[in-house]
Image (cartoon, rainbow, N blue to C red):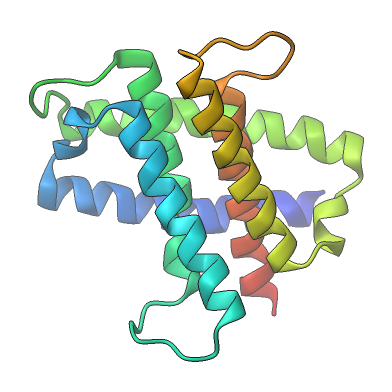
Length: 179
């Protein structure tokens, strides 16, 4: 588990660095997005990963690593939007963005530790393609919950699904790094 935590924190650090650098370039311009729009952006990224896994010809140079990083960061944006709602303008400065990022990373990391204990690091035996498919399933579930006005009867809510996407994407990044 110590190896997993070290790898998890390493790839997460790369995600956070990119998030904060983009925030320096663009500010919190994404704050105007409704949560459903963030979900659609996540779906596009996950669909591109699946397409790259299935097709040998690539017309855009970026590979799956940048898309998995995007899944992490957009999922954190979605969690922020769930908490704060969308805004009419970018309303968060760099310090506030970093504080919110760290808040959601911390709770998601805690969730990973608990699930990783219970599941015995089963993700290490999974294929990358299966991780991608599970992310797509989570996104379809999120879309259905959004279509149900955020209500569920017996299922996890939106936040749990976004957290699972973060953890699956980080597991994929770890697997890519360890290849």
